[in-house]
Length: 181
Image (cartoon, rainbow, N blue to C red; front, top):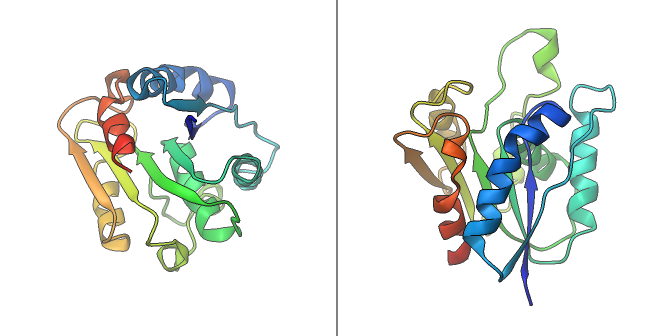
């Protein structure tokens, strides 16, 4: 029986989905036939992120127990928000976050994207959690990974020398880690 992976794309609806389709394809290829990767389109409902949080929650709730969750960029940050704010009843086998922004600042537009101050306390520490970030990421500053290291000391962190924000469209490292859980 195949293991199931749910992969959430970066910002924007169609443009983020299209840009991250190569990441989803790389993950699918590198995981092989023992895994099934689902890659849903996250649509904006007009609210800055609440609609995506709810959609991620619905996607997880309709998944099999033992689901493996993955997200890139905005999708990774919304997945983390969802897991720390909503009651998730499905058994999660692992969480894999790539190029994850840590939203901060006082601007009105950023408020809806921020994690709750106690978000880390609400995550299940028994679920393997991996965060990946390329040193040469041109979209999300590498320093965001250091913030997550302080907040999530039990997680596994992978600092990748090159690959930019799109990881050179190669998620071999992520697939290898998924296979370990």
